[in-house]
Each structure stands twice: as structure tokens, then as C-alpha cells.
Image 1 (tube, rainbow, N blue to C red):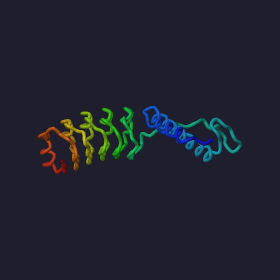
Image 2: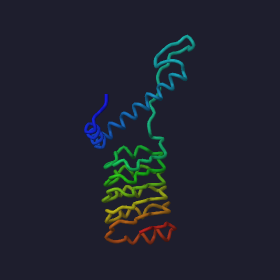
Image 3: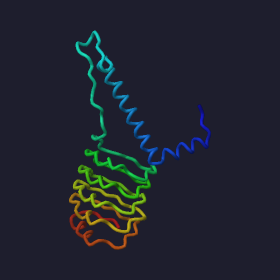
Image 4: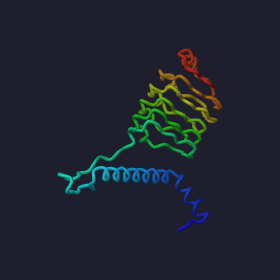
Length: 191
């Protein structure tokens, strides 16, 4: 069944909405789970709850896999407007690249990404950053190149591992005094 160009455009617009993104995520998770199930079935040689002559027991299932072990997320150029609060559940995440989207603010749960080392939020619609960003104690690189940030949360001064902070192309009302402190700690601050 072929879709007309106008039908395709409507479909793409609905998928870009928050509900559409959630639907795509849900479908992708279901497909991934089905692939895992097929792999387990092939390896074990039995369907779930199935007895075979070659096996002395029933296959009694498995645990669903989750994305909590994800280490890198590259979500550039997807026109994302918001990020789910569940983002904080990705506790092994080391690198989060969200450049070239339309995100206005990361959710407060971003502070739960305690292993995050690289956060790239350049070229978004950032108006503000949550104070929770100060909990990212392993963060070494923070790219906030933007055209909308007018102020920085003081919580950024609490990032002990920060090596590079890129603030270019923003419209900051004033540079906070703690920026000098970061520079003295060896952090390269680009303004």
C-alpha cells in the first residue's frame, strides 16, 4: 500500500510530535524485545514454557532487557523538543549528544546521570538549565553553544571534573564570577 505525498507528510508530522516520538520509542523497544526473544529461542531450542525431548525442563521465560546499561546516546538532528523525565534512569550513560534539536531545557532528572562525562546540547532552543546539572560530578565536557541562554545556573560551578565548557554564541546577560574559578582549575571556558 503506497501513501501519497500529503499522507506521508502528515505521518511524519505526527511522528515528530511528543506522542509520535513515544510511539516510535515504544515500537523500537518492542522490536528489540522480539529480536532478543527470537535469539533466546534459537539458542535454547525451545519456545517460552515449551518442553522438548532434548531438554529435561521447560523454558520458563527470561527477564526483559532494559536500556539502563546504555553508555552512549547520539540523538542529533531529530527535532526533539522535550526529553523524557525517565532519562535519569540511564545510569550508565557516559555520553549524551543532543545537538541540533529543539530542546528548551533538559529535565531535572538529568542530574541522575552520575556517570555522564560528555553532554552536548549545542544548537538547541535552550532557555535555561536545571540546577540538577550540578550533580554531574564526572562531567568533563559540556557544550552549550546556543543562541538563547541568558544566564547560567550557579550549579555549574560545582562540576569538579569539568575540563571544557563551551558557551559561545549565547546572549548571556553577564558572566558569573565563578567562571574564573573554573578556568583556574584548568577548565577551558569558551565564551
